[in-house]
Length: 68
Image 1: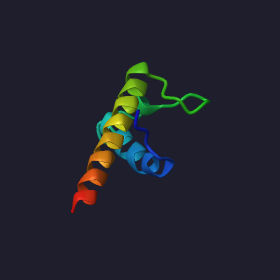
Image 2: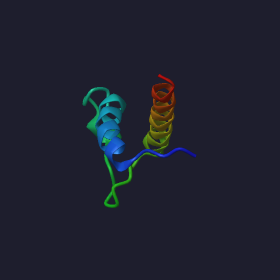
Image 3: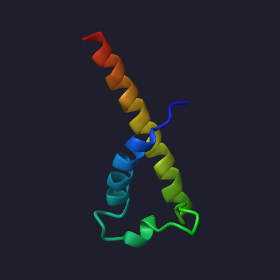
């Protein structure tokens, strides 16, 4: 399974949260608990999928760059 680096997470998370909260109109959608986890299971699941997509995209781009 591909994972996202900490650096990539710092880039991807704000983009994800902006998208998930409808450009900040619903900030409670991305609220976190005291451990830093999203309160809503649907948001937590969406973040997992978002990270997988980002990791896969990065891997594809890396493979593409290696062929040039």
